[in-house]
Amino acid sequence: KGAPDWVNEGTQAVSDKNGQLIQGIGMAAPMNDSSLQKSTADNRARAEVARVLSTYIDSTISDYSSSSGGNNSSSVARDIRSATKLALNGAIIKGNWKDKKTGNIYSFAELDMEKVDKAIEATASMNENFKRYFSEKSNANFDRFVKDNQQ
Image (tube, one colour):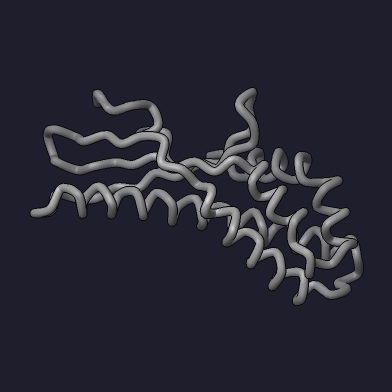
């Protein structure tokens, strides 16, 4: 009670007027060092973004493998994971909140999927067929992923 909406909504993938976003929430219990506590909450929020992005990427690779007959799926998986690690650097901390009752700090991280799209487009070594597939299907695949993962 009294927390920002994002604390109670939790980690999620959203597709709305603001774009296609992965939002992660992290929490850290009270520590002797408040800076370390905030940093821990921030890192946990980023880890939540990474967890959701990884699930989305696995789903996309599976869809691509099915549509392409499994051609080069292991090399595509390796290349896309490298690209998404770079894109994760674009996850930003949008807010923090401290529960005065418990002392817990909550952090809100967000990654705009446009950064993932650009990272994949810029990867020179990636399979061109996959890049084309990803570019053509990215929005629809993300919207389906959001729908399939709503609670």
